[in-house]
Image (cartoon, rainbow, N blue to C red; front, side):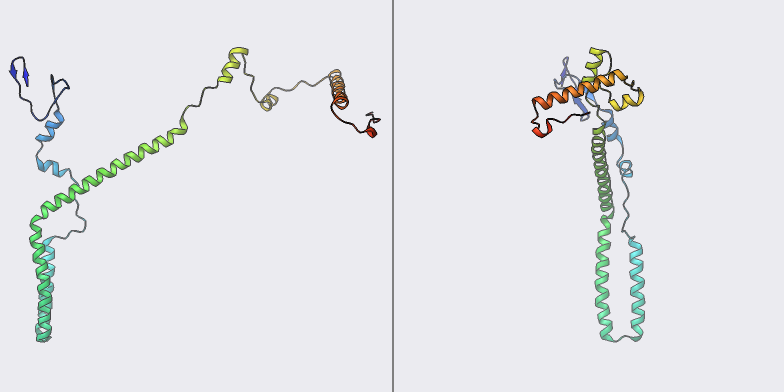
Length: 214
């Protein structure tokens, strides 16, 4: 990169702006590159499930072969001894293959540790996604309800709230009893309304036209 007539070298840990003018270094990337490999490997989980030391395996098979051979040498016939030799040879061949494979045991162990690390990371990512999903679902009912426009209009226009349920108002504010004059006037109004309805809208049978309510 040229800058003011000078040639400036950029390392692999340098990030350029979109216009290519000012480089930005990343200290975290430099620190990761500076760490030795054994330090990074110690951060991996060690997986030892289902593993048996090669020395224990060799000792166990050797003792088993020696005990069987000592027992067969005293009582077994040639045919039985020959069958045992064939069977033992197969075990020794398998043991030899395991011993050769153990040369790469360190590499295999690293692969197992890396796999366990990646699986742990995957579980953590899935847990984070499940947590975000649960948060979204649990916070959805916690939304603020819509503004009560009707109450706002009542308060602004009349200066009071007119939509209080009647049952609440009756339980708090006692109703003023009607006077005798009001009761009499109400009954007269009801009688006039009933008479008007019967004469105008309802078809009253002739037999009931002479009835009077005393």
